[in-house]
Image 1 (cartoon, one colour):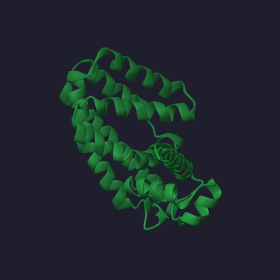
Image 2: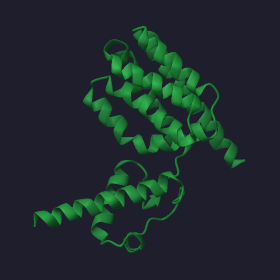
Image 3: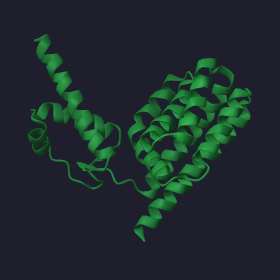
Image 4: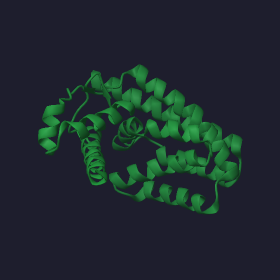
Length: 210
């Protein structure tokens, strides 16, 4: 019985990762209808792990009303409003509490952001923000950002693929403020950085409609 539960959990995780990755890489574009039976056939498993995987993806905001999410301008603004509030506060905390090894990792993320491949830059961007959020030490804040991680990825991809100007320069400014243990400046810079991300994503979203 225990073995069956392990197998069931494994099937759920595999189904979740495959479906999530298909959404994030564009194989399942926004608006695509999600059909349990079709996915179960494609992935060679029963509908139970598919159903569990879809429940998780709904919780993360990637599936709404049995369709792949197509974020609206309002969705985008709401997401960034939460990020600006939480990550601004996290950056202020990081200036006080971030340990030396994490400061070194932030510096490495900036270097990769300037020199890496698109995939490496995506990973470094995510890691940069993740380290700062973790520095808050606030489990509710960390959990809230973590739950939005997949949706954040979609917009992060827009920012990186379309090469938003000054993206990494802003990361370096935030890093320097944290390094100097200047919490208020780190907070303001993070808020300005995320507002610039929002403005850029809105510009790309509106341009694609024209």
